[in-house]
Length: 407
Image 1 (tube, rainbow, N blue to C red):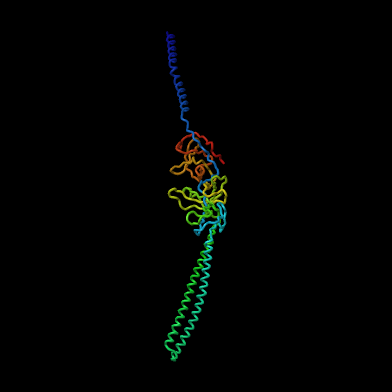
Image 2: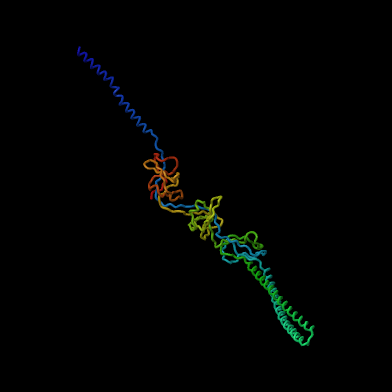
């Protein structure tokens, strides 16, 4: 009886353990499932965005201001006739000719002026003859006056002794006054002839000057840029000048420059000028910076002096490149630079995290920016700054394929 009870107890214990075994093993299965789910969750997390970066490299950077404009004469000289109404009989210069100061460019018909000069000389000869005659009359009037005064004085002495009459004395006094009047008239005649002679001399000088001006001369040395006259035409100061000269052959580039670029320009700065259609570059220098900016266009004006060259034609279009700065330092593409309220900033990536750094800019030009401070050589910088990523964002880095190598 006791043995039977013991066997029943053992069976009950084994059955209980069999029932309890699945419930004890379940927690281990559940934990494995949860671990698997957690592992799959990490794999499904979103990947950080990919940004293109460029390494800050040390190189020399040159800032250049590009200008364009028209080639013009530094000083254009207009040659017009100084006398009018005369026919042009000779043309001695063509467009493109290089002429010297005083060289004759054209001649006018001078025959009428030569005849007028001969008439002026004849008039002068007549006046000289009249002058001699008037001077002789003065001498005669002086002699008559002396004689009349002597007769009057003798008559005056005789009257005191009663040897002459009062009538005779009056006659002698009248003769003395008449002789003096003739002397005065002769003197005035000489003065008039002298004045007429001076006028005749002035007329001769004027005619000579007109004769000289029939030779149309170059007032300065230079190059004939235009000739607006034909043989047989009548010279006139109205309308276009007969010739246009490029004084001393000096040609310049006249260009308009934005007001923001003007402060970086200085007189004497070198400029590489490329005239339209020319394969060579001319080395020019800034000669003049106008002190005025057009208030409508906000453009200033500069003049660039060019060397003498057959490639330069006034009126032609030309481009120029002006070096406004040169520096060796950390450089990046200009697209990497952004501006915050505090000033320029760059987005630097380190260990996959974006950090926004304020920087100091040294120079900007040709699509590049030189950084004075704020980053170091080799720092990876977001190549195209913007609002795509922010400070503290985690990113995946992709190097810019066209990044400049470190030097």
